[in-house]
Length: 260
Image 1 (cartoon, rainbow, N blue to C red):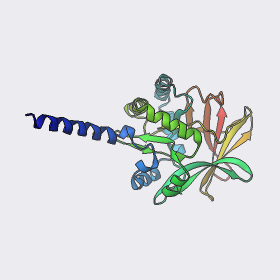
Image 2: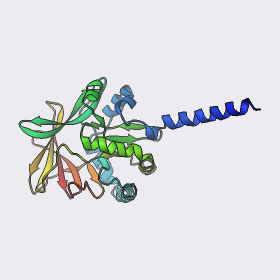
Image 3: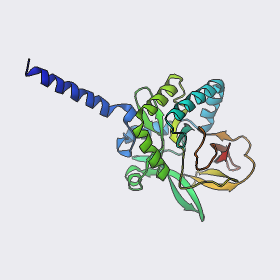
Image 4: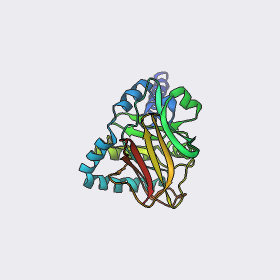
């Protein structure tokens, strides 16, 4: 017994450590955690923004309840400055070994946020990290990534508060909103709108890039689709950010970011 008892204790301790380190709730906090083949297949099967918007509207009364419960969780962990929900939908198809990356770039002489597919090794070199996640019962799949410093900061907070991710995952999966909404880090440092500006995003099929730029307007486009929800909003902007998608005259998607 004296020989078997410490051996058994050591085996139990090792088992507990292994379960903790491979828990899906703690996975996918960096690009090395991604199963790239699985990720490509999953992303390329995501629904269109129109389809998921329609499904979300069909469950509008339940969605309001989900937002209320999510806000309680976010405020409890004091993460309202960083996190919210994004509508699950695809931008452009991913190729082999690619992830979708958002990063600040100049576009036509204007400071912008561009999102497009990059080889995962290039994304790592650019210091991209996961910025949003889609939950399933046994797995967390990265939705899209970003190089923004505020996303890096928010990611560290999520790693420090794994119970928050667990509670948000439970909420979305138990209510069956996990195929419609992703947990997302919404705060951005690279491009901050002024009080009289919104962000307009044009998905250019020719360039295969989503281009976000500030735009001065007092009106929203007709038939816009809201694609993000925050709780109290980033303190640096003193607003509640909202992304919206519409189609322009050339049938391209346009997303709007405004203050609610």
